Image 1 (cartoon, rainbow, N blue to C red):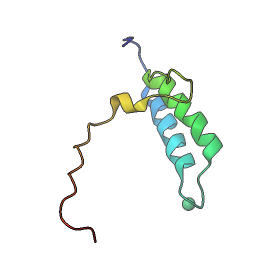
Image 2 (spheres, rainbow, N blue to C red):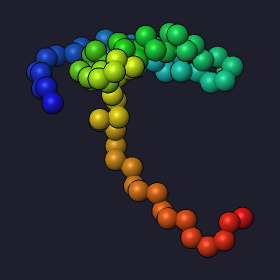
Image 3 (tube, protein in one colour):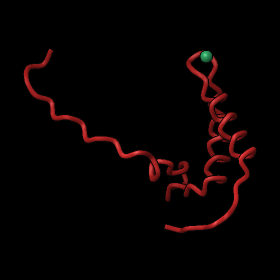
Length: 77
Ligand SMILES: [Zn+2]
């Protein structure tokens, strides 16, 4: 994976996250188009690479590992 050293200012990062959270909204107030743009800004600031097919940015590379789901046992309810 590429590794670049560069400074990102706290105000720029804070604003990008605030914009991202604002456009995330909920069912009544999400702004999907703005959200996609805000996500790209965050990816740029944080050096998150795009998916190979260009469909977005692979934040998943950096997310906290999740525990494997427990196998389902017993009867279905
Ligand atoms: Zn809402």
